[in-house]
Length: 295
Image (cartoon, rainbow, N blue to C red):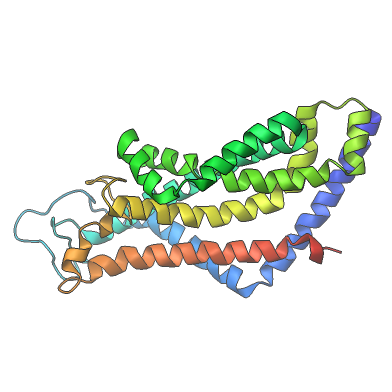
């Protein structure tokens, strides 16, 4: 027990030093910091916005109020169903970001567990799990996403489940490759020699060492999940009206691209800027966590 405690203390000190270095280097990455500032601003806006702009996003205005131009009463105008676009933009942002975060984090957790188990045990377990991963990676993702969405139903949680089902394989292969190299390290042999259980080795000793690629993958995965949600909802298989998401706000907007282009620009730019911000943050984290630059 004393040897195991000493081993954990050394790992904690190294981990603390490493993450301090990562934070310092991340702050120097201009694009990543720009993306972080923009992303925080968007998140605060979609959370605080409805508290200030108290308009029901699903309420239809009575009267001929379809496709109104931006005004004091409706800063983003109204859509083809006479609903306030600004209120729907706030509500849609919440749902799109929630789907992005929930789907990416869930897929990463599943992929990390599969990768840890496959890499640590190897042999038949590794072969079976990796063949499942290979089969799923060979399937064209987007058409199957649409098919699965139509089978499971159209809603927020169904979309999250659909994205998770086809979003964990890359993380599994990534974590497995790192674990295979960690198995040859001396601290692994020392842990086995003093009788540490496989689950403790995987989740206490291995998991902190694979956090860097997992965090980068999750960050990039959030952006991809938002795009998947927008694409599925745009085609009518995702979040359904009257609920709003940035994706389904684009569903009927193409009909009014010439006489009301704002219906495309508001949600479209939100998706573009949000995903670009996540990509910038992911690039910054990847550079900051590069072990080759850690001396």
